[in-house]
Length: 353
Length: 255
Ligand SMILES: Nc1ncnc2c1ncn2[C@@H]1O[C@H](COP(=O)(O)OP(=O)(O)O)[C@@H](O)[C@H]1O
Ligand SMILES: [Mg+2]
Image (cartoon, rainbow over the protein chains, first blue to last red):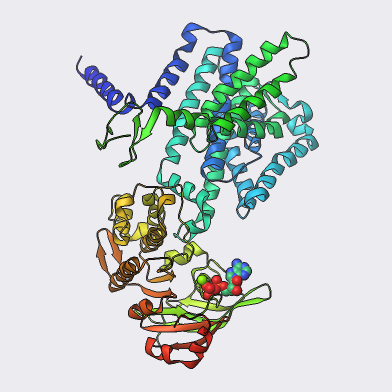
């Protein structure tokens, strides 16, 4: 026993005092355990493929929330970071022969630099001007991609990247593991001192400046961090699909990420992740289910849109914040969250009602 | 001759065809508390916004402790020691009150001067304590009353430990009792000293205010603006007897 026993007991203590006290934390724990245990029950090739893409898009959606949700810099062209990183990753892999564990981080660096390139002209923009400018960037780049097919592969893109890992199960563990780690990292950022400043910029940028804080620096930081996480997603996608093409820059992808994030619940990080985990597999199910009925596949987008709109009608803050407020209550005195069935606050013992 | 603490010369600002401040010049000393009065639309807010760097002047210059700060970034000016409050309060509504003040505490100036303070939260708490709203630290700013929002403005400004504080109508919308409390806090701040982990330099102040009776008690000197021009500059006693000032205020019924 000895040392192992000590570690075991400490883990159990942390679990009991920090995790099992709140429904939302239990849910996160169950989600992660289920995600990790899943290949023990099925290794179905197609099923894992859907979940791998889900994890990749979950990272992507959370990175949008970091920039647009938390910092309030509405990005309508988020696919830019994804697409650029995918191309950079593909070029590094195909032309220089770099393996994924080099090409993906370097692709993410491409995402960071793209964040700077977009962030600087957007510094003075707000509202619809910001939205339109960010929307324009990936469209311009798509034009560039078609203009230099020798480098970018033009319409067909760059194909034949090396595999992400040796097997589908390994691909699954890599992407879902990274999704958990990067999701946690983004959540930590929003929970930090930097996070407070990003929040404050969303609320009132001028008041942040008169508080003595260099808002230019923090806004660019938000663009770069968001570009980094979106870039990791883009690089993973390129290696997993073994392809980087203009579809990674499409307006459709930029809008998709907003729908996922708004559906799950903005300004939470975990909301957009949950949004992707619900909507992306659902879209696949709809596709397969409707495929066997002639004429129905076109209904897929309609059903999808109706579902999202209905949800937002009843849960304007998004799905996850709505659920969270049902299963947890905030202590009126110390503002700590408690399970809904508690009579007294778990920290300050105030009466909950 | 020694450099004045703050020297404003020929400061001019137009909004379209409207002149908000017209070649305004004045200087003030390190320990002065200066009242800035004038009818609505006289250009008072514009003048302090020019000093705090929120607005850029069309002409003229501002020197602070011998350095030219005209056209410097707002955050640089704050970090040099000039803090200000908004006439129409601008809290971070969806953030807890303590987080509102933590933003100022995270400014380079506050971080450097509070290096010995282990927790930013603790310093923010002391700023709230000073302003008298520490018992609401965890509430969202959107739940505050007008009076408490004014206090939050002051707490935010004080947290940067300024040497010059620009207060835009600190008594605006306050009840008589709240006004008294605010006046006391301002006087205490000007005396300087330590408030927990927060240090007051005993800042010089420019205070814009309509409640003249209250203002007279805390200022050494008053400048009167009218249509962007300085029409009087003197002690409170001189100002109330100045015929031009009385003329400018006619119809406002303030004096
Ligand atoms: N941002 C602005 N754009 C256009 N006009 C403005 C602006 N700010 C102030 N003004 C005008 O400048 C004049 C002075 O305003 P202000 O400095 O707010 O006066 P005060 O604070 O003395 O009431 C007013 O006529 C006001 O309408
Ligand atoms: Mg004003």
